[in-house]
Amino acid sequence: MKLQVLSLLSLASIASASWSKNLNYRSPSEHHPALGISIHKVVKRNDPASGYPATSLNFTHGVASGDPYPTSVILWTRVAPQSENSQSNLTVTGFVPLYDHDNEKYVKVSKSPICVEYKVASDKNLTKVVDSGTVYTSSDVDFTVKVEAKNLQAYSTYYYQFNVCGSNNKSPLGRTKTTPNADDDITKVSLAVYSCANYPFGFFNAYGNPVRKDSVDYVIHLGDYIYEYQNGEYGWGNSLGRIPQPDKEIFSLYDYRTRIATYRTDLDLVASHQQFPWIPVWDDHEVADNTYRDGSSELNNTEDSFLRDGGVSVDQRKLNAVRAYFEWMPIRQVDMDDNLRIWRSFSIGKLVDLVMLDTRQYDRSITDLYWNTDYIHDISNDAGRSLMGSRQEHWFYNSLSESAQRGATWRIVGSQIVFSRLNQSAAYGSENPLNYDAWDGYQANRNRTLNHLYSNNINNNIFLAGDSHASWVSDLVWLDAKDYDPSTGAGSIGVEFAGSAVTSPCPYGANISLATANNYSSIIQSANTELQWQDLYYRGYFELHFTHDEVQANFFGMPTVVTRNAWEIPLANFTVKSGANRLQRPVAGGVVESGSLKFGKTVQNNITLDTGNGTWFVSHADLEVL
Image (cartoon, rainbow, N blue to C red; front, side, top):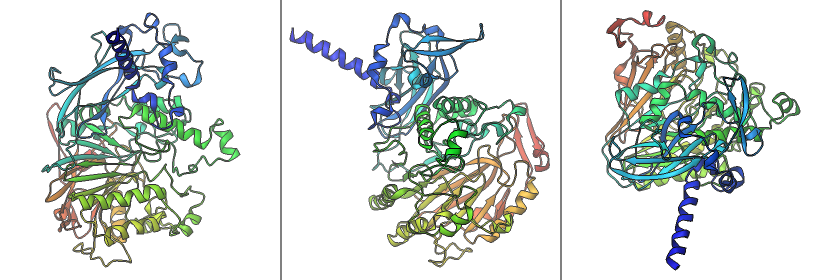
């Protein structure tokens, strides 16, 4: 009798575990269950007799993995009766409206949960299984599934797949990779770094090229994974057949779910998620333009903005955006005391410590909202201003110190916005020369960061940035406090690599010519002492290849993003030697393909493009009209 009771208890425990294994029921915050979904209410609706037939379900958006640890990784998929996103937040409990295309109307369909199995193996045939399980999803979480695959070996490649329970209805096969143990002495690791993918401005070719080359271990995304704008307000997707849905500025949970889902139909983005584990963080447009702790450029908790935006408050809009982000992204629920923490760190053996910051949403002081630029200029060096808030800022400095103390060779800091000074007054003709929405608007915060690095002799620092839709490579310098020689790099404490956008347009105009862009780059480069290379023209990405001796940074430009293609141009290559804390001279070997290089030259060579139907040899003049 006792054995029977134990067996029943064991089965009950397994059943409970199966439901809670879908981490999205607890999104976005592990310690705020009221913000998540009541699992016991979902369980009550579980009626297999009224559930969806396995043949009616589809894995609508592929698979993804992310936030790799040495023994575990997050896996993601979406399995649903149709691609359209759930409006469950707008409907009565127990039903979800689905569009009946045959009869051209919405019908109420039972929201009975869907049972999904997953399997993780060390081989492509999934015969050497290392982890597996059963999990449920439902309209409550937009039919998304997010699980933590466990029992994995460090720095190892795995393959995974989902299927509808008891059927042969399977997802695509995904590939992922764990990180090394923190004390593993690995010899190399490679990363692809992205930011700013705007759907109506073009195809996400940059995401697909490392897949085709199989050139990296992990993907870093620094934010602006989506944009909240209406088509036509920022981007013209009509001509490309890329109109983001819903076709309006987004505010509700349904809006944000649908917008992310639209972006996840891009085949190169799907491929990147399927082949590489991602480590993402948000910028501002995952919520709204120029967000800060208390609002954004267009939503500031005023009566006018509240009514204009359909009665959605700042806090509600942020929560909608954050919840959709956690539902759709292969990211862990960080151990947090509030629902907006995304800042976290990863140790990749003894080689690299990666610190991912949130310089936008968490606790940022008021930023440049376009109408208050003069005011932000006046207070830009106020000691009370912070990009991160005191809690994140202290964590950041402690993370840097602990990394140095444990002997990690390199420290990577993923910051959404450019850290180095960017004086663009000569190009823009502005009375306020700096970008006060970046670190230039929080100069005391930047000085505290630099002081911590210099005072504690923390070396081998590599700062990353996105946001600006342009490429910037600088020595990391405390201007006006430390001597610096731009010709040698002496006085620097590290290097910053800031990448261009996947598709978002050049800040000087989407249709700017190469010659005009390079002219602006030359003006900007000359106006900034520590800025060694600047390029405005190309959309693209960069790769970082780490060894204990050096970092190689390779920047790639997309010849065109108005068609889906596999073309790319090597724009510039940089080296940082361990212990040097500056770019190796001559910077980029003295020659770059585009932009402006300090003490170097720009040489635009003929480019070889493999079109799949033979090879073309074309010049830059030809590329501009492709």
